[in-house]
Length: 233
Image (cartoon, rainbow, N blue to C red; front, side, top):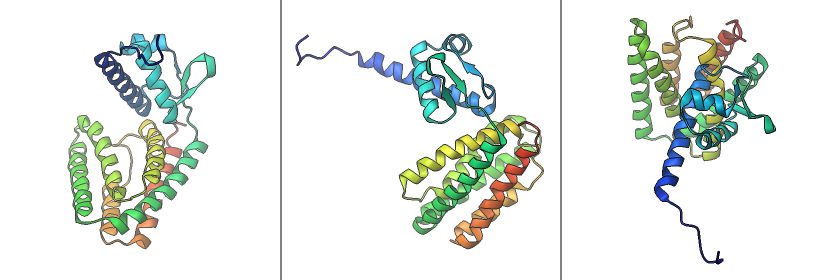
């Protein structure tokens, strides 16, 4: 082939392969976070292909991305495995979350405008409405609650201008959430999460970082203690 020549690439096929890899990543990620794929599960391509009906190439690409997400570990030539869980690891993640959340919040409070305030209020309103459905016994709302709970916490820090800080926070947030989702159920947590969220929102809107910092620490520490006493680790 002439050096100036380039192989013909079917853009449609390339896009399809990319979309399949993204879909595979989303499916595997959710099953890891929910515990459907338990910690230390060996992730062999053949097994995943049979389970999800997804081709080997998109699966390998998805698994490589999950390694970067710290949800899957590569076993050299022996394939992949879901990252193990331990109380010591969750302690470390919780402490990191406290630090990163407060750093991101401090910047978010300084840069947040009226749109940020409105988005925060709206995010908590949507979360509370779904919580009311769960309290009435609607188990189908739990998946929606998970998404809206994350949306609320993301809204709090959304005015932070540091993209690196937000990326680090997101990675730690997701890894820590796996512990909560696997070890606790939304209905079993005996604490007033609604009140905690409301107190955090109020302090954030007042731009009161002195009040907000201990609220964040307490909010995350309560989750750690519930996970630690759940008997699941």
